[in-house]
Length: 142
Image 1: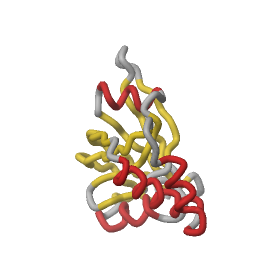
Image 2 (image 1 turned 135 degrees about the vertical axis):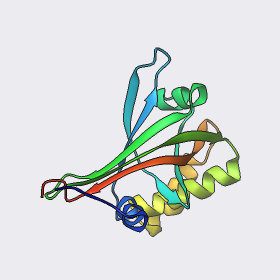
Image 3 (image 1 turned 30 degrees about the vertical axis):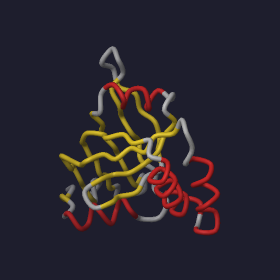
Image 4 (image 1 turned 180 degrees about the vertical axis):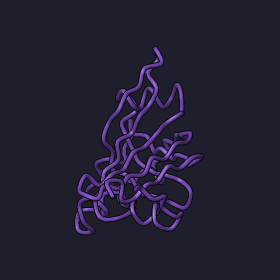
C-alpha cells in the first residue's frame, strides 16, 4: 500500500541525482502541454530555465499555473507531483547563475559554467515556481 512521503522525504526525492521532471503547462485553448525539464529545488521553489519562445515559455508567460511530476519508474515506484504558479525573470545575472547551478546538477561541476553561458542569454527565461500543493507517494506497488 502506498505511503505518503514526509516533507523531508519528498524534497530529498526530487533532488536526488539527475532525476528530470515532467512539467505540465496550460495552452491558450486550456489543454495541457507536458515537457521534460532539468530543475533545482530552492527552498519552497522549483527553479528551471527555458527559452522564451518555446511552447512552455509562451504558456508560462500567459498562464503561470503548472504541475511538475518527478517519479522513480522502478519498483516499488515513488512519485511526487508539485503544483504552483510560475514567476518569470529575464535578469541576465540571475539567469546565468541558475543556469550554471542547474548545469552542475545534470552535467557535472566541470561543465556548469558552459551550461550557464549557453542558457544564461537573452531570449531565455528563469522560471521560479512557488510550490502550493504537494502529492508525494512512496512504495506505490506494495
